[in-house]
Length: 93
Image 1 (cartoon, rainbow, N blue to C red):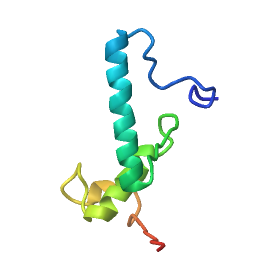
Image 2 (spheres, rainbow, N blue to C red; image 1 turned 45 degrees about the horizontal axis):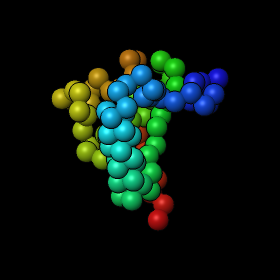
Image 3 (cartoon, one colour; image 1 turned 60 degrees about the horizontal axis):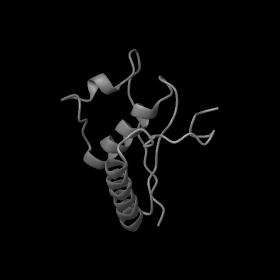
Image 4 (cartoon, one colour; image 1 turned 90 degrees about the horizontal axis):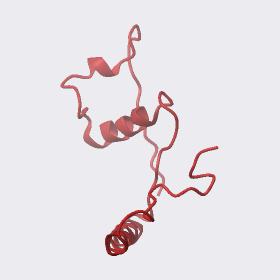
C-alpha cells in the first residue's frame, strides 16, 4: 500500500519553521484552487518504476504537439523491432 493510501502526507511540514510552513501551505492552497478553477482539479500518475507513467504523459504530449519533446524524429518512439507505434485519442464533449 502506498504512503498516500495510508494517509501519509506527501510533504511533511512539521519540521519546518512555522512561519515558512504557513507560507508554503498558503502557496499550495492557491495552486490547488487555481488548478481546480481552471482545469477541474489535478491528476497524478502514481506507480512503481517501469509501470508506464512517463510513456502515458509522453503520449498525451505527443498528441497535443504532434512531435516529441525529447527526440527530433519519430523513429526512437517506435518499439525496437516493431513496424509502427500507435497513439490514439478519443475526445468526449
